[in-house]
Length: 353
Ligand code: NCD
Image 1: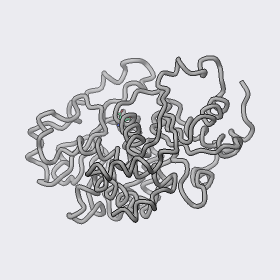
Image 2: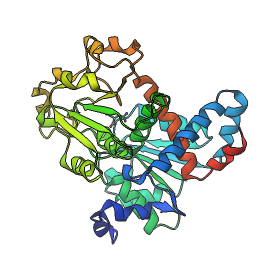
Image 3: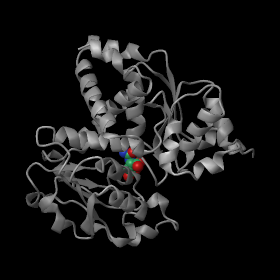
Image 4: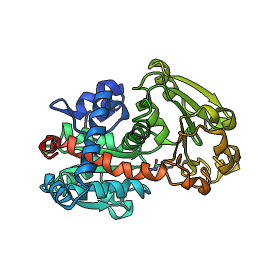
């Protein structure tokens, strides 16, 4: 297989040095790592998403939104399982009038015929204006964006919709947007106690969320997991460098009463080295039961990126503290805002309201 020159040295650069490659005219063009977002960007995206929700409340607003990117086409290249992320990106495109095509089964693409990532991506770029991708290979989205920025004449944005066990930057956006909305009249995100519980070692959503929480003041994170699924060192180092307080525990009951946010995640057993090995670990004390609610703050926020197995008792679903259904819907709105911002069509909305 042909290998494009330069990839190996690019891949090994620190993320901070790679980030400028994914900006065009000072605007984030490719969304690859969560560290690309800063507070200003988040605040702007939240207000844009709120504005879009208002505009979309009636038919004339919806019709208007559909004109904004009706000259664009997007490919959803999702070769790893996905329900919410896929649907929320697809519907986000539909809201903006972006036409879409999709590849979801890797056995139907030319990857199986031995085509290189570079040739495949350049082929995609002949047909569409945006690539949204989820891939088991941690470096796939980065490599796709790199090849388009450095080797192709036609440059188009790439959005990472989940890269292996590593990153899920747009999930982090919807998670932080959900927390911001829940606490908008209660002091905002700063100063909050956040519990992250479950398979923290292999869950990309919690890894990415930590990087956004670090943008706020006085956050405290409790990592709650069995030691086999503890948060990895790279994220802990990131938090230490960014002066975020955290603790590591396996006692959920003890930390629950102080929590403002409880974010549960499932066992990521698709990443087991030996199939079924992680099922041997007892996770029963790492799930939220209905009885636990009475020990929790009245206005705490319970979240889950989904899919859920038994991390949150379904009896909790109707409690006002359950935010996971809102969380899924917030995903569509914040992705609409993100796509608008990437194409720099966001200013069109200023005149509308
Ligand atoms: C998550 C993912 O794919 O990382 N799901 C999602 O995108 N909402 C979480 C998971 O699969 O556990």
